[in-house]
Length: 454
Image 1 (cartoon, one colour):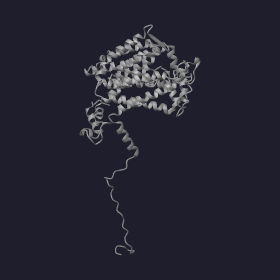
Image 2: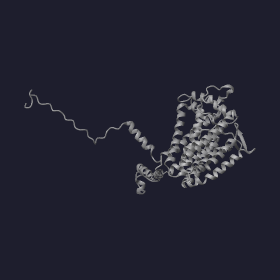
Image 3: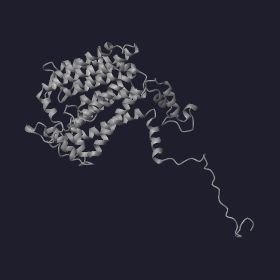
Image 4: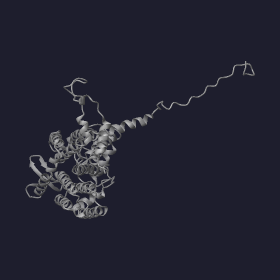
């Protein structure tokens, strides 16, 4: 054949065509999953769902663990096995009502309640020191008897009072551009905070005083306190703390029990060591709900300060990590609310509540793990104690109200389709039938935010 020396037909080589640029490339499954999670995480109502869902799960799981951890203690006191659970359930029911009310209240009403709540908390904390009214529990004079088995701890309400009052004070000063002056940064915030700390320390409650100090420093940090001012106030607080610890043999003994693996002479570290024993015997998935051994008289305060240890023993590492994840989600949502708002009061109040709950959870869990001294503070929303549960649930209601008040969240709630009473695709206005536009709302809200948003 022509064109071939051997007479065979020439081999036709296939010409490679250039890759079609318009053909979509295969996405990495991990990257695709990350993109979807990131979009879901960045939705306007994410903080709202995290705060509401996280606090609900913590409270419900806490009720279950209170019932499990307190049965033996109640029977040892010749009480019904469900005695402490019923009291905690009653407190949770009242707290749920407070949460609902707080979540529906406007911001102006929250600001209006700041001074009455502060005055009421100070009045009750003064009553604690009056003979015949205040009562001592575990060596601390910080309780008021309400009759029967019901008691109230006013210092727990002092945390909520400090958050609301300080947020209103700093917001008003920021609106008048006074926070640039150090005297307006400190006065009267620091003196009032130290007054509350003094009333608490009169009863010997070092743990609550530490949490109030953490709230104070969190508010100063949010207000943009200079480093020198921040360090100065911190130095005073640390000095006072060292003096209070050095002058108390009980506090020095607690400090020496950090990381202890043996009860020591006189069983001084008995509670700390048996808390470690409970966590160590839980394994990955625990011994089963209700099957704790340490709660049979070995672990003091199993349903209050050391309920996290019983959780580790019965639910294992999986249960404790779940509790930590819920608190981490709650803390993240609080920081997100504080960072995305334009209202200074909302920023300070959300930051103060987040600091309060996070610091108290860290102090409690750190003590159970043997990393911190035992401070005698409950795990928020989880441990037994109505005095701690009621103000905490009201504070959660604050966060929910602030999360609903974000511009993008308000738009998302307004664009929700009704669940009942209207069929899809029929009736309603064009606005009701329009699809949700999350990205549009997010861009609109982003344009309205200040440049200092985190």
